[in-house]
Amino acid sequence: MNPMTYSSVTLYYFSGTGNARASANWFAEVAKEQKIDCEVIQLYREIEVNQPVNDQRKQLIGFFFPTHGFNAAPAMLKFIWHFPKIKNASVILVNTRAGMKISKLFAPGLSGLAQILPAIILKAKGFKIVGMQPIDLPSNWISLHPGLKEKVMESIFARCEKITKQFANRILSGGTKYKALISLPIDLAIVPISIGYYFFGRYFLAKTFISTKECNGCEICEQQCPVGAIRMIHERPFWSFHCESCMKCMNNCPKRAIQTAHLYSFILWYLLWFLIPALGLWLAFQKKIIEIIGNEWLATNLLTILLFIISLPVIALAYRLLHYVTRWKWVDDIDKYTSLTFYSFWRRYNFGLKRFRKADKK
Ligand SMILES: Cc1cc2nc3c(=O)[nH]c(=O)nc-3n(C[C@H](O)[C@H](O)[C@H](O)COP(=O)(O)O)c2cc1C
Ligand code: SF4
Ligand code: SF4
Image (cartoon, rainbow, N blue to C red; front, side):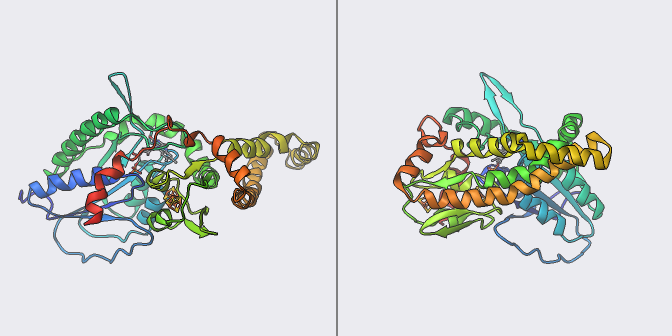
């Protein structure tokens, strides 16, 4: 072991479909090759971090997580927020993003606040940040697009393994690397979207999952959700607002019974954002508020925030109703056939998950 470098490495990861987990494991492989004590810890439900002993040894702490809505996955953000201060510890941040491959070209994802916000929190706690690295593993957001082809995923994984290991070698030899900062201007430009996703988007998405009649009530999705967001109601999963859309349940269901209710989501979105605001009552209310505040820009923005707040209970109620009525076969059929995820051309993303199935069974 190089005496100038770390005596121990602890890597925390949150992962929906295995990408962040793969990345943490590649890093750990390099640490082990260098005979450095290394532990890889999964964030699953509520995990307790015992206040580590503040000894004089130099330790490295790593946080590996997916990018969600141009932000760090909320579970990881919460974990970092509550993470204890540790003397003599350096940290690295690795966010996995939506990598794609167009012809022979690898296309990167976008971080937004995913690196910046955790870095600010950790810096405020007094940690020394020695590495900030995005890793562009295959996109798992299959509510939005079909899963990538196996061959494409293989080549993206091979490339990312190399990048992660190069990063690990650099950090573990005592160096620093801030690759994430290259895209800072773009990341800052999309901050409004990151905020919108964090306070509204993720709640809306949580209520777009539904299971169809193919579900046999095996409860795998409920047991394996990393944040405990699923409840079984009448032997069918019900998604709560805690869901982070990590995509694990949908990609892992043995019956392929979980869908994104696309038509339902579209109708709800249309009602909330186009139809209701277009009603005379809302327009009159808007006029009155502009008159009271005296600033059209401010009044319009405040009303948009109000509409977001009002829409959350409406979304919750509509979802309850959807969950209830999909007990009837004909409603279930409409829901199923109007969900793009139901069709076989809309592949699942389980390349990352498959890699770890054997290890999990041991
Ligand atoms: C709800 C959701 C939002 C996402 N938002 C982003 C994003 O803003 N930027 C990006 O590059 N990738 C985004 N992705 C893609 C994932 O971050 C990416 O596929 C990641 O590698 C998944 O890691 P995991 O398998 O460890 O969960 C998103 C995925 C999901 C499911
Ligand atoms: S994993 Fe699939 S089949 Fe099992 S309870 Fe969940 S939705 Fe139903
Ligand atoms: S409910 Fe499914 S998508 Fe949501 S956090 Fe749990 S496993 Fe992930």
